[in-house]
Length: 197
Image 1: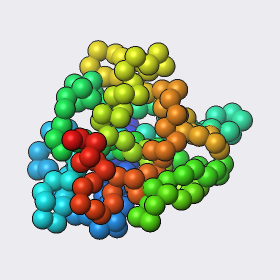
Image 2: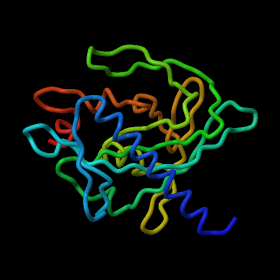
Image 3: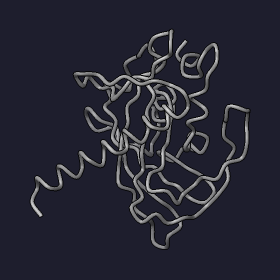
């Protein structure tokens, strides 16, 4: 197949991950707005009367299984300038791991819901899995981390998912796994807004 096919396929995969995130955010009762011109934010999450709730950047990668099939892995690149620049409201990264084999290795982790903290399966049997965190959180994980690669204008982070944990650049990121309930909850002040304050 020619290069045009694969370029189109890559764009379609990225768009499907972005719309998957938009669908989940809307399911939780938030509206979204898409920028006419792409300036680094894929979409904005809106409060009904309070303006922009969060800026969202979705990064999508095809994940691969290790041999033997004990972990799922993907590498992500983030622009250094975007990562270091303060945003208001805060920028939320969503790293989407596309598992085209759809295999399961199962596990349970604590997660935030609208009703407090509960146990939730890592859910490693769906075609797309999400790792959510704010720009400030990601920067804290990556700065001074010997397991990530700073290459000019980009930083590269490997994400690894096992039955017990999720790591990014060797750091434990399990609490951010499929953590939509952590960042998208109704209330007087959002978690994203508190982190940006």
